[in-house]
Length: 171
Image (cartoon, rainbow, N blue to C red):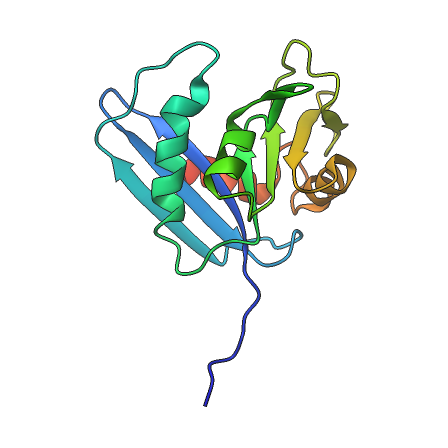
């Protein structure tokens, strides 16, 4: 008898750096409007690369891949804290993740601050905030990605599950 087939989850990831090393976290959920994660996973990373301006992905990407490797099944979409595209045609962390996942999993980037030249990012207004989130994407239409982020649970600027993954990697 075959096992029941469950849809792959959406996964939000974040990394928090410490004096030495980092903690990467992932939360999975099945519907954009879910109020709580299906699963929470963390990975302690003992050694991380030094920060290099313009090459943030060199530091962050190995941490994200480590925590994604701890999931019991691959996600159907990954949401990262940052940009997929910094500027039109200039890859950010999210695009490097998309490449590392062999272009098999769409990636949505959600940034809290505007990046110089990021006019292509779709602004998303949530809650009563007057400051948008900035959404970019790989292998998913940016407007569809922005609609997903808009539909996420929570009354504030930052959706509940994105806040949850941020807190998880900091704890």
